[in-house]
Length: 252
Image (tube, rainbow, N blue to C red; front, side):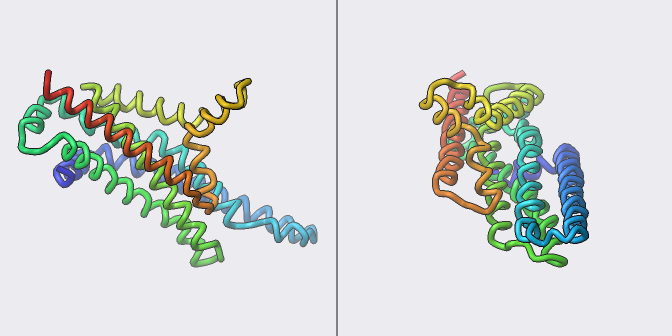
């Protein structure tokens, strides 16, 4: 199922276009950040402000901040890549053949998700090309960079699992994509909305629900167990809901 889904993804230009657009914007942001870093570094050296050089860290200013912007881009790209997972098959009627084949709902959902996961792994590898250039000419932190890439992948996978569930609820790819983007943005912005709450308990809950709360530390190179647990729980819960949605189709 995963192989079939992966082949169908690359059978249309949508995946190529989305990945190309993502890489174009990501490259612009990365090299713009690097250019600003070098200009400001020259200004600091010209002014003789050597005390600031220790604080002017390539990893924090270029790599970590670029990764944070990449995460925002992924909130748009991942739902659009995952929107066709079930919606297309429901629209064309091929979902009936899949449901009557000798596979379980769990296998169907996992197969679809693994295909999208493989695609997102490719996106992560392509993203790694940008900081890889810094290792050729600079001295960024290897483990912190790897931690940031790992966090980007886990964040992408959690969004993909959620969008698989959304896709299983509708026949329209456009609806699945738009709802997926909206859900990703809501999860991204929830921690900021938490500050307006008067209840400390509500603040804590909203902060925990927000994805930005759990990827910011990882993108900076600090991998925390609670963040890993959040992404793992999101993936498992979303896939369980997607499986329930697929099961419901068997009885219609």
